[in-house]
Image (cartoon, rainbow, N blue to C red; front, side, top):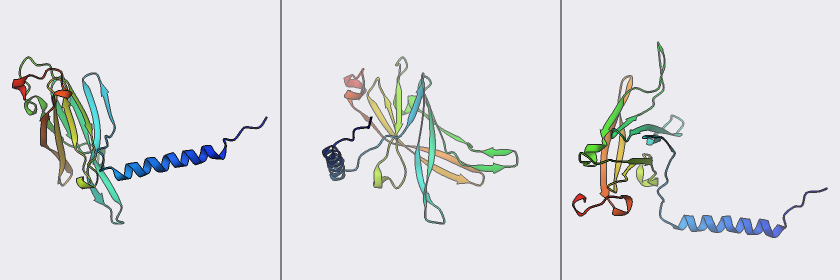
Length: 180
């Protein structure tokens, strides 16, 4: 019994569809692309580039930050993995920067915040860094953070910068006129 091959017209339609899709995508403005993340209970983990460095061979290498969110405490941590060989072994993580999301989002006592986060890409406009987006689902607020590296001998210390905070009623459940 021989396997039946799809007709040539199937291949032509498939190629046409791919071509049309690429053509439509290239005409649109640069898109915001979300990177990977993971979540377990009230904790989330995400990673994204914060800078692009050029090697001696002119090869771009992205430097990533790792983000850890504990939304039950409202603490957001970030570190910049840096491979270092030491006398005692290999060191990848050095220091962590911390943000207090309760303060950043203006969460009042008695509120029960729920945070989500992801990294994104701003395309060529970002010069190699990815913003970290944090959404508080009760109030409908979204904040944009930027992490930069402050290098000292033997350490790369991350620094958080809150770029923007915005409220949109469509993102939250408990929007009131006084919470904007």
